[in-house]
Image (cartoon, rainbow, N blue to C red; front, top):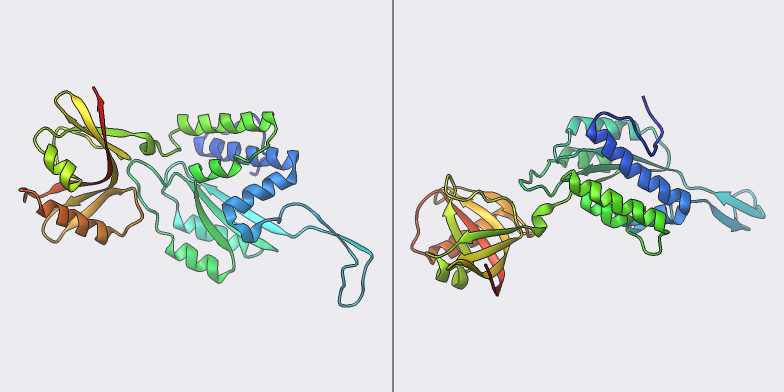
Amino acid sequence: MSRNIRLFPSYSQRENQTTNHCLLILKMLYEENPKFLSEVLSKLLGEGLSGIVGVKFTQQAGKKQSIPDGEITQEPFYILLETKRGSSLDEEQLLRHLESLKQKQGRKILIALANYEQDEPKAPAFSNVKKTAEADKILFLPISFEDFLESIKLSNLPKNIADAINDLEEYFNEEDLLPSWKYRLDVVNCAGTYDDVIKHKIYVCTAKGGSYSHRRSLYLGVYRNKQVDWVAKIEAVVDIESEEEFSIKWKNINKSDEELAEIARIRRSYLDDSQYPARVFLLTDLHPTDFL
């Protein structure tokens, strides 16, 4: 059963609560000024869809059979939103949404809102959904909670809406819907490999077992002598399982898995280390520091 968006929802499932909060913010933006919602949709969906919200007023618009003195129009559009707190979206469910959108008029859009930037990312396979959407002239967009949040942070918003957006950001943080890895520093003991880390921009440890549990992080702290001497950005972490086999633990840059694996093998070849399986951290932008 469908329900109106409201300030105090009675949904028991957290996923439905998250959807309600997102739609409530969009509703507040629209009620304050339709141009606010139009700007948000333009950010999310692209400039080609800017201005689709709100009526248009024209005068002396020539028609095929007549020229009316004035005209008030609203371009039809239909947006469906599917929300997941993780990144595992059901392909069959998305295909059913596309099927229902085929019956609608005007611009048709399906948004898959999910947490695509988790600590252990699992890129969903959307190939069938994208092909079907393109064939049916439906715009399909996977959007992260982070991108959604950035799209609604408009300039010159009234205080009540700006405060509500801040509250939504706090909710996203508390519910682990934002990529906390972007602010995480993984400090590792490099006493025995310090020179290799600095010279070759690589940190290597065992891929199985070991002393550290490496969660996805953007930064690596090079620790020795009871202090962190350097901080580096982590481009990717590659598990080299044999001379031929590899897997990507995570990547923070836009390079192919094959390219990252090749970089990892080349940098590792500079080291006196040929054990398998090995976990290779590819580093960049090293900066000296000194904190305990």
